[in-house]
Length: 250
Image 1 (cartoon, rainbow, N blue to C red):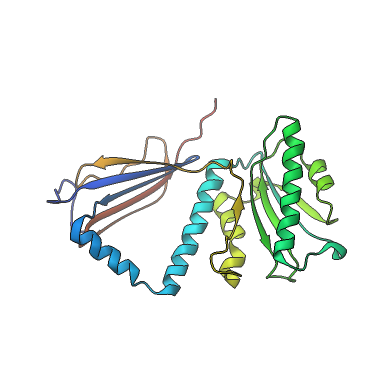
Image 2: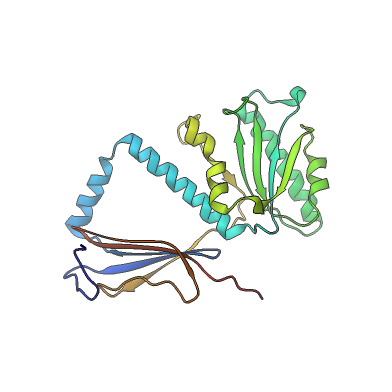
């Protein structure tokens, strides 16, 4: 049974709602503000978390960050999932060399599209530790309706490449797929990024609101609730709600 119930006033503590909007996804987190000695004590406890637990938390955060970018940026009905591979004669020996080739390809793609007044938005990852150990690249790229011939023309280092509609997987599945090698093998170097994105990707919009102590979170009308939870502890109450807003058509 919870420590608090609706309508209770938590003396000396304030509650706040954090709203995070990414595409049609809306996160709502309501929590008791921690201040003074309580907040300091909580920060000290976090510093004592083991390195293994911290690494797992960091990984989860990176996956979630990518997922929210995908939710905000890409349209499964229009955009593309691309895999670029190398022929034997052009196979890079180092990841840095593979990344340079990919950057060159993306620069040419941007320039070609820019000439037609179209921007290029992407998320990219280079892999080479799993499977047969050959370097290859996965990308999510905004679709224009005229991409297949251009991509095949510009990728000059391989004869086999895969260009699929993005709708074959959902956003979260793609976020996990783009980070799977790091999860399985770890980072090659400390601080190495798991994935990279173009500067023009869209990012979640975050706002804050004050909440009445003891109030409960509720999804907007017509939204589909995907996950929710409420927990009470010695600091106060924590509520979490994730929903998907109704799709609108202009």
